Structures are given as C-alpha cells and as structure tokens.
Amino acid sequence: MNITVDCDLNASWLHGLGSPTLLQLLAKGQVQQHAMPLEALIAEEFGLKATPDYPLAAIAAHADGVSVDGRYCLRADPVHMVLQRDCFSLHESFPLPLSQVEAQALVASLNQHFSRDGLHFMLGASGACYLLLNGTPQIQTTLPSVALDKNSHDFLPQGNDASYWLALLNEVQMLLHEHPINLAREAAGQLALNSLWFSAGGTLPTKASLLAHHASLMANSKLYEGMAKLGALPYAPLPDSLAHGLQQSASTMRLHVPCTEALDALWLTPLWQALKQAKINQLTLNLGFYERMLQLSIRPRDVYKFWRRPRALEAYWS
Image (tube, rainbow, N blue to C red; front, side, top):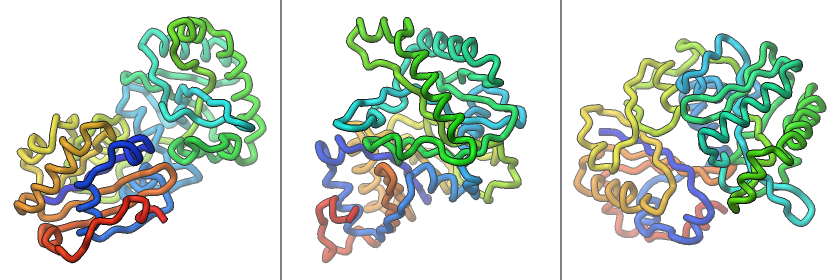
C-alpha cells in the first residue's frame, strides 16, 4: 500500500507539542522543501493551474451543495482581523468558526446589502461561505495560509479590478462593525467577525483538466470530496485512526489529517510503526507550514538507516 498524508501544521503544535516521531521520519526519509502552501501543492498534483488563482473554491462548493453552474466562485471566509502594532493580520483561527444561525444571518445580510452589485453569497452544507459572480474579476487573491500572521494589506486582492475589491472589503467591514452577530459574540466573549477573506477563485474545472489520479481519498474536507467527485475517485470521511485506514482495500490512499494534539498518537506514530512492519510500501508526508511546506518520502528500508540522526525541526525550514 502506498499512502500520501497531507497535514497543515500550526505554530502552536510545532513550538509546543512537537513530535519525536516526526523527527525520526524526517531523519530517515528524503525531504524536499517547497515554497508554496499545501493547498497549492495539492492543486498542482491534481493537474490544476493557477490562472491566476487555483479554482479551489468552485471545487469545494461543487461538493458542498452549491450550484456553481459555470459561474466564477470565490471562498468568502469569515475572519477575525487582529490589530498589530501598525497593521492588521489574519487570526490563526481561520476560518472563524460560526454557528449555523450566525452563518445564515451573515449570508442573508451580505446578499441584502450587495444585491444591486450582482454579488451572490451562498452557504454550503458544511457552513462554508462562497461568493458567486456572473463575470470573471480581474484579480489575483492569496491563499489564507500565506497571509496568516502577516500584514494583511500585502495580500489583499491585486490586479486591474483591485480597487473595486478593496472598496468592497471596506464596505463589508463597515457592515459587520455593529452587526447583531458581533454584538452577541462580543457579549459572549467570542472573537468578533470583522471581515471576509476572498480566495481561490475560478470556475469549476472539468474532469479532463485533472491529471489521472488513482488514489482513494479520505478526508473531512469539501475540497478533497470535490476533487474525488470531479475525478470519479473513491472518497470516504477520515477514519478515527490510521488502523482503520489500513483496513481499506485500496492500494493507493491519500488522507488529509488535522493538526491536533492527537496528530502524533493517531497518525504519525502508527505510520512509523506501519513502515517498520512493512505494511506500507511507501509513505509521502506533505507538511504545510504557512506559505511553505515539507515533502517527505520514505520506504520501509529507510527506517533502518541508523546513521541518520534526528535534527531539530527548525533545521528543515531554513
């Protein structure tokens, strides 16, 4: 069995919990660093090109119960912008978790306010928010993983229509400033919903535009579900642990696992053990970290390269 595991790491996990198992895997395998976020790598590996965005919003919406119907689709993620010393930045909690009632109220307010502008906000079954347009905007957006914890102004929409979209964002922020959603959230001590982040725009690709991919996909992600739907690939929700995943009959499997406190116990350590027992022929581990990522390739024979000693994780990002 060949397994590819995708995971977006976060700063708190890297600098707080860490993982001796991850250091062992990195030490024994072949590691490459890529100057792109994990979502971009996934898009490239499925044959998608940035024109100028990767059309990830349309793919996810297609699996999320939204009728894209050939229209241009953007993610319109609710966010909390943090005031730094001299700029605003995206909060790590991205997208900002909203209740179903909050999400419905948000979309209703946006559609009412922007109805004359030809903007159509839609809520997917997952609770994700999308923006559908009849035309193609002349902008390039930035994936949120690239902009997190940086000056957000440097990553706002760019291109011939940028001035319109910057004005639109200002209007969205004014609409949200004293919105009933935020009054209730602030009273409850929750982060305010003070902006939207537009990204991953494009129209829905055809199956012919995807590279041939034979993996069975397992994830709790509308993007992966959408990729599977377009490519006619087997798809299933992420199992509780790797042990359940190894019971599948697929010879090639791709999983998207969340970066939680259980990452080591549920996934990394069992992967290491499965390699040692030759239950996995090859493991590819794609680790996203903001605008960069590490790609690890390792086979069972590699785990016995005792002369390769673990290094500090920071050494792989230099």
